[in-house]
Image: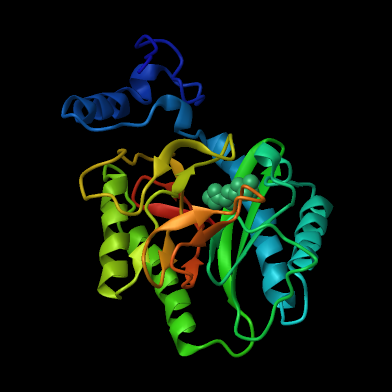
Length: 290
Ligand code: MF3
Ligand code: CO
């Protein structure tokens, strides 16, 4: 960790002297690091100004998902959802973050039934009665990023699939209870995994969440099968996603060979995911996007 001199300006941009600002904060982090823990670098701790800008981005992200929630129905294609996302985002001054991200061809990910994530919208995929779908929206506004996703049940969905969708949301809420400064990401990950196992489902192991804000995907990578007291220390100003993917059956997955993106469950059983973007605050957390 690079530190300013005691009388130099603090790294956080407050304009205060370091000794009057983050010096004790940094010392506390160093103590925890000395105990062998993973700690965040200054570069992923957001300043007040950055947090405000990220929240502006998230306003668009939330509005887009609200629009999708109002209009989604049986009979439309996932390409139609993609157009809504592009239109609402750009009308509000943002850019859909997925568009051209590492070659992703559309503005949003739409993942149905046994698709775990990264489904590509298409004119050929028509929503039908009984489908469950994750719509994963991410926004870039002036270089500040937001990311969240919701599940939608189309028409008459089986009780089994409904229960999975509900459990995926509850898992996220169980994890959220563990988000507080000076705790560890593993506290959250274990809470998610314990809950999911108690329901007889499984958590996808090799795809996870991420830090976010100044980039779409920042350090750290976030696991939802981690153990209490492990993984990165959470401190005020740290922003990350909680987005566990919950499989009805086994946790194994595979990638579509033709498009290189879409992830499916190996056993063909359904998968569900909700995603929120969370800020660690002085006394707990704040949900930035949902
Ligand atoms: N929104 C996804 C996430 O939660 C990332 C999608 S990358 C894309 O991290 F290129 F597929 F859009
Ligand atoms: Co994400």
